Amino acid sequence: MASNILSSPALSFELVARCSTTRARASNLTLPHGLVRLPIFMPVATQASLKGITPQQLEETGCRLSLNNTYHLGLKPGQEVLDVVGGAHKFQGWSHNLLTDSGGQVRRRFQMVSLLKLAKITEEGVTFLSPHDGSPMLLTPEHSMSLQNSIGSDIMMQLDDVLVTTSPDKARMREAMERSVRWLDRCIAAHKNPSTQNLFCIIQGGLDLDMRRECCKAMLARDTPGIAIGGLSGGEAKDDYCRVVKTCTDMLPDLKPRYVMGIGYPEDLVVSVALGADMFDCVWPTRTARFGNAITKHGVLKIRSVQFASDFGPIEQGCGCMCCRTDGDGMGVTRAYVHHNASKETVSAHLLTIHNVWYQVNLMREMRESIIEDRFPAFIRRFFANLYEHKA
Ligand code: GUN
Ligand code: ZN
Image 1 (cartoon, rainbow, N blue to C red):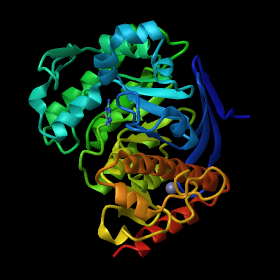
Image 2 (image 1 turned 180 degrees about the vertical axis):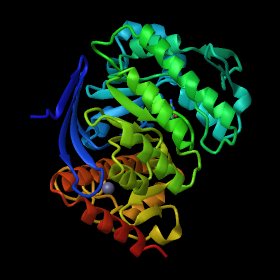
Image 3 (image 1 turned 90 degrees about the horizontal axis):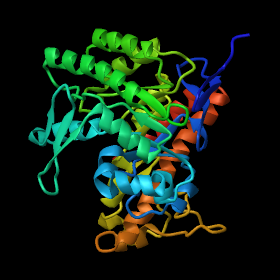
């Protein structure tokens, strides 16, 4: 009998169910800090905090794997502090799993906002000019791994050479893809704790499907316990995005987790799960909460707009988050209350952050249940009907 479980030293992956009509899968990922049910959305706590919500509140949303950034933690609190406290789990009081991005994403962000002069790349590594004092910091694959070993994350990402997918320069795209493979080898060689921390590779290659295939092949030969697809969400067209994800998932082994980096709009999550991806992260749900926006199944609500000033309903009818619930320990806050506080008080940002993270976690849970019960196509139809029916 073909097994549906694959174990690596610090991870085990069990395929629980497959959708019979799409490529969607439901699986169990067991990491050093416990079980994670896939598919999953991971909220991003850049500086080891979800700006305003406590680790306990994050736990109450159902989140069991959250994301920290190596570059930010390396600057503050810094490696010595992390070594003294014994890693980022202890530092932030988080007993569940952590994934750290390597620093490569900082460069990607600088490209998107045209601050490229702040991030220079050579074969040695990425040099950032500190946004605080302008001092240069060289992040090499070895340094990124050393920081991630000190952080103690359950999943560490390789340092990669990221180019936004809209970059037209094919030769430069090939250089970035090939360099990312060489940097994976340097990361593997520098990794000090392979029996307690998982290192994932990141597939690059832009929108060129042959380059993606070539990169997949090279990365798969390195046999990491999980695989990420990077270099997306740079403003590419949706059909280009889908072609890249499908081309990669077609080549990836069934019994390893597949992580599409930087994706977080609900409709992109649903489509990407249908294409066979398992893990996602994005700053958008928490960032947009701080701008006063609530994610709901009928789309995003701008709670600061005047129509909510005397709306005494919950943020979202039927939502099970602690802000919207009226039973038990639910707070039963009204839209009017969130609106009233939205421009001057941080309480609205906190409430919307909790609601939005809960929305994303719950969306993934509903997808998982529908895959297990083999009714995912009906789930997709209802999801898109809800999203578009109330749009003006
Ligand atoms: N976050 C979103 N996309 C990427 C990527 O391609 N590489 C890394 N390291 N982080 C990302
Ligand atoms: Zn809610």
